[in-house]
Length: 328
Ligand SMILES: Cc1cc2nc3c(=O)[nH]c(=O)nc-3n(C[C@H](O)[C@H](O)[C@H](O)COP(=O)(O)OP(=O)(O)OC[C@H]3O[C@@H](n4cnc5c(N)ncnc54)[C@H](O)[C@@H]3O)c2cc1C
Image (tube, rainbow, N blue to C red; front, side):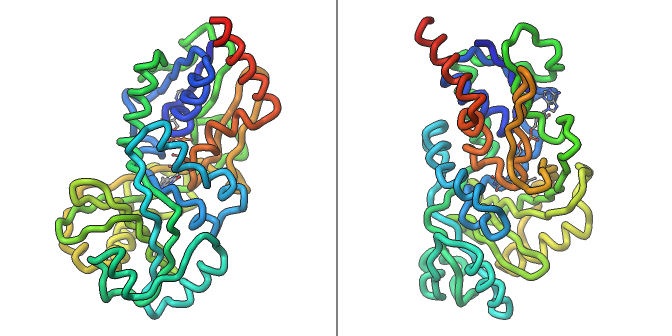
């Protein structure tokens, strides 16, 4: 079977991976000139379904709990499994209790253990929650690795391509995010910064709860930290606003004052594609399968790719591709 995947964000790449793994001949068409620049590129890369359950429905946890395993198998060595640390300033202790009451999969940690987990935060926070089973990855590194792996196994990539010009496929998988034609889809703008400072080291994503400006810091290599992210009901992909910048920097400073001296090495904006219930959908219309609405959870990979094969209609596709592989 020949499959055309439209879009090389995380939905498209993971769908390409699942179809190729089942023996389909896969072509990926992406309108951008190269990998990146989309919502997936600006993501934190947190594999945090237990934390996300604070504001998400149960399917996000059910579908996301194996995400770290999925990425480990697809891109070995790029997933860090050190959990997520959730903190709040003493005056916001109520936020921590509220977060705990809405989630599972954590244990409470006190000041001493916080200092052991993250020595640079020693003495700054009295209480926290450790979600030990969670992980994180660098979206750019991981997407590049997945692209290279797919290309090496024969998946064709056409960047800067209008997918209409790629002919001769049996199925189209529409993974075009916010560009998809779907009246139910809305955009949730996410602004982020990358800060660099040699004065702070973190081993895992740290979420700082705050009644108005919750924030997370995700460690990258080279003393860089992805600081995110705003949640604004808007489809605008325009530059980060001064107000958002102040909020992100202010909360980073509250996490650790050394962020005040950090270099701002990047600002970025991604628009999260979301349906009204904030849950992902796989919709089939003739030969076109659309995967969309990944909202805050694009890297909880089962939602994007495996989900296709968990639908009755598309189980048939797996059999078709398996059958073709056997007869190839
Ligand atoms: C700041 C921020 C932080 C986030 N943090 C996390 C996180 O920590 N963990 C997590 O799991 N999720 C996170 N997310 C959410 C996640 O990034 C999204 O759910 C995910 O990126 C959506 O992926 P997508 O592939 O559907 O869309 P996109 O990444 O936007 O990809 C769609 C692609 O389709 C292409 N396209 C459009 N039209 C066409 C066409 N006609 N033909 C071919 N190609 C086309 C576009 O150019 C684009 O490359 C975050 C999002 C943001 C913005």
